[in-house]
Image (cartoon, rainbow, N blue to C red; front, side, top):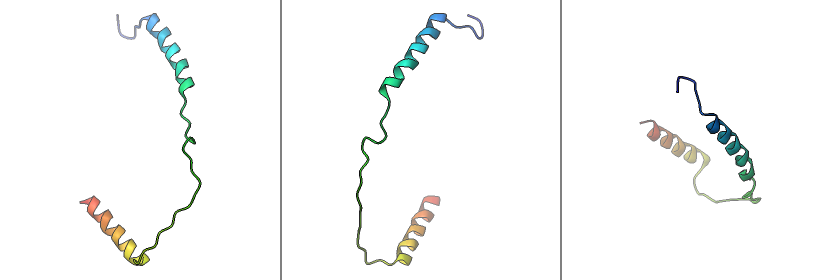
Length: 61
């Protein structure tokens, strides 16, 4: 085969494969959950933001 040539039977099979992909669609809402979360901490907002900044600095190194 030369540059740009292809086997027509391979092209036909590729089209059939594309049609099959639609039947196995992913449902992104299958595991959606409604609810809430809360937690208590003795740390202040400033302490938490400071710790976050430290963690960001550690990743940059």
